[in-house]
Structures are given as structure tokens and as C-alpha cells.
Length: 232
Image (tube, rainbow, N blue to C red; front, side, top):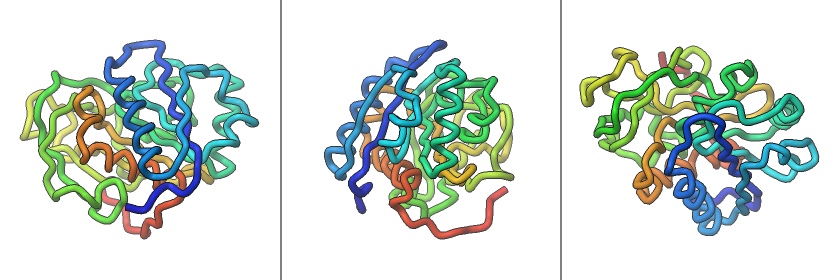
């Protein structure tokens, strides 16, 4: 698999709400991907890193299971400027339960978390078999996670990569079309979001790691992605 060029990735995992116990495993997985694929990784929970000068040193920022309000207004302004000058965003799992009151972040993540049932096996359908985050996956991917419902679906504004078959688990509330991972270009930058990533065990799985790596490659612009019509 092509590496993420010689780039630096920031992994941000601050929480002011629910805190996932899988955060250290998630951060370690990105560090290990960086060591294997040729990109530097810095990890922090310090919102003061979100300044124009410091963000300029990163090709993408990974919001690793962030939760709640994690940046102050100057941080909002700095991160928005970073995206508008070509920066990348990767949101993992509860990144969708972050910054509900910041409209620009809502554009980045694509959809906000609503609710979830208990952790259980589910059946994921790979919609886009060409994207670097999903090209390695089988057409139907059986895995275990905490399956999120979202307040809205991003299918009119984003490229949907995977959907969730609600008949394969109990407690789903979005119906026939349940997006699970997607990407899009926003304001000059690239964004990728995946709902996968609740459990500690997920981050040890090669399929999940390749999924995250593909999302990072997309967000940094190091992966060529053909344009396709949106799924909806």
C-alpha cells in the first residue's frame, strides 16, 4: 500500500463528555501506522495546539474519539483556516459527538451522533470499492462495534463509502439506508469520517487499521481518488 508521503499527522483526542477507554489503543494504532508507512505522528489533548502556526506543520488532523466541546473560539478559527488552506480532517467514531454547536465542524464531520444500542456484531456493506479506506475490504464486512445512529444522513453532500445493514443487529434506528463511513471535500480541504472505532480490540485488527490508513491517505491528498457520482 502506498505510504502517506513524508507528512506529519496530528492526533487529537480531547474529551469533555464521554471518554472512550479505547483512545490509547486508537492513538497507538495511528503511531504504528505512521512508523510503518513513513509519516510522523504527534498526539495531544492540548487545545492550545490549534493555532495557525502549529497546525501549519500537519497534513491532516485526526479527531480520535473526541467528545464534547474540545476547542475554544480561537481554536475554531485556526482550524477552519487550516482546512480552508488545504488541511485534512479525519474523524473517528465519537468525533461525531463533538462540537455540536460549531456549524463548520458539522460540515467537516458530515453528520452528528444521535444514539446507539449496545456493542454487538453487525454487517457492513462496502459501497465504494475503489476508495483507499475500503478497497481492501470484502463486499460484506462482518465486525463488532457500537453502531451509531446519526441525526441526519450525509448522502446528499458526501461520498458514502460504507453502509450498515440494520437487519444484522438490534437497535438500529436509521432504516434501510444507514451510512457508516464517508468522505468529501470541504472549503478547500478533505474530510473523512468513520463510525468504526469504539472498542479497544478494533484497533488491533488489520482491516480496521487499513481502513484508518486509507482515510488518512485521502485526507492528506496522498491518495488519488477517482470522482464518482454520489450514492443516495
